Length: 103
Ligand SMILES: [Zn+2]
Ligand SMILES: [Zn+2]
Image 1 (tube, rainbow, N blue to C red):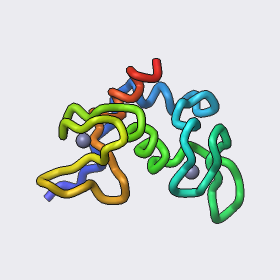
Image 2 (image 1 turned 60 degrees about the horizontal axis):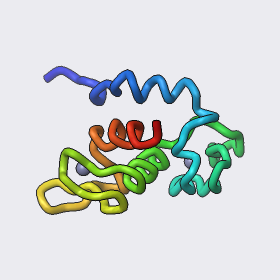
Image 3 (image 1 turned 30 degrees about the vertical axis):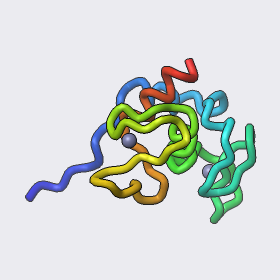
């Protein structure tokens, strides 16, 4: 068995990562570190500001975009086989959709 990392992110998302300060995901509260609207994410262990948390990206995508993978409308959690994805995660396609919406 070969060990593999998670699927690589689409280039469009990676591009956003390089410009965190302006990321539209800042328009939602971070469910992970509780950073407020337009506030940077904070690393709880050090109190320093860091990259936008994945959970915030997921929350933002869920709030603003439809998911083309599981066919849900904005605000509705992603699901798979009738179950909501763990920890508020969303399908990769939804991140792409959210970017299109934000652009
Ligand atoms: Zn955060
Ligand atoms: Zn989905």
